Amino acid sequence: FTGEMENGEDSSRDFAESSDSDQDQELIALQLIDAVVDNDCDEVKRLLDAGGDENTIDKQRNASLLELACYYENPGVAELLLERGASPRAKYDEGKETPLQIAIKKGDGASAVAILNKYEKEKEENKLSEEDRTLSQEDWNESLILAAHKGEQKLVERLITLGADQGYSSKRNSFTLLHSAASSKNLRLFKYV
Image: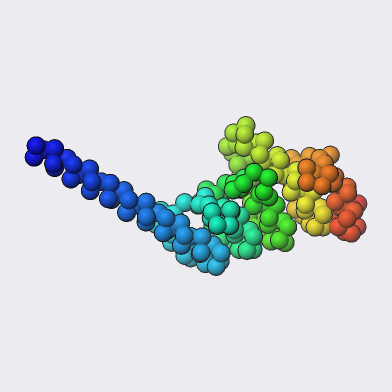
């Protein structure tokens, strides 16, 4: 009977430690979300070093940390998250824009470049699964249309180099690259496409 009691006590202690650990992770996640929104790169680094997850989801905003960094135009934080392993394809809900699309839409060229750098590195190192290749291609294609609409010629050129389909028609508005370039009123871009 004494052995059972000791085992029972150990089990409850393990459970309590597990609960404390879960609470610690939840607290780190909340602090991480706040640090990303506040563009506090040092705090984000500290929290990631303390065991925070670079792919944490903010359930209130329905967004990944990378989506938040791009939305709040925090390129340093976006780059740090990507360096630590955040997925450039991660989006909280199906049908939402990807971090790359958010960065382009918000005019955060530095975050967009960091994401494209991550894509290029994955592609060069051949680290993309078939599913990731499909998701990446969809992201590049939609991002190409969006970048052209915004008149972002350098991003358009990089996306085409990555493999974005120049003949693609957007699922959102049926625009093609040519439609989007024309709507941007960027004559150089229009001539380029």
